[in-house]
Image 1 (tube, one colour):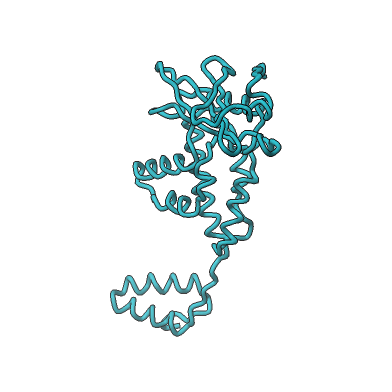
Image 2 (cartoon, helix red, strand yellow):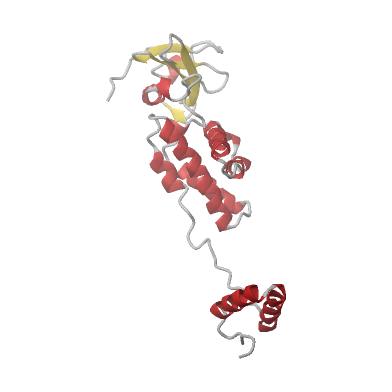
Length: 254
């Protein structure tokens, strides 16, 4: 485990709240090429990571709320010590995650990349769009590497049921969401939290129901007669199919 960095200005909420409100974060180094920043807001401050991109520049990204007015929960609200660990996770291998900036992908960006991949492979782009249609801004803006709790995905999945979607539609939407996240994980070595969505987006049981459609005998016979009107061969083919699917049908001439 990386050694924690000490900072008199950031370690406690009392010290942080003494600093003036500013759009510019105050940074401390927490690893080689990695800085943890604190932006003082009128309300709770925010934690910001700054990491070298391997090309002489760097990228920055806000990733959590500081525990200025509420206790840290390890997810959205982080203490100074927790924020250090998250900043290192986000910065790890940063230059490989995004070909343009090195910034870790958000959930919304993974859906965009999934849609582009579907287009390139001739797939159904609606698989990406169906996820985007039901994706709330709060989840869309989150960084994929920080979604470690299956409950976040499970809450989203179960919310689709509350919207009135059928279980089978929910499963199709979740499968598309998983495919987008798996694609992102395959392209970014920092994404190691696959179990979060594999558990949280697990398929709902008994969602698929087979349709047992029974065609009346007179309708089947009409279909067979129409097939014979096309050609003898086609008529025989339809007769065999009818006899195979429904043993109670009386075949012509029997």
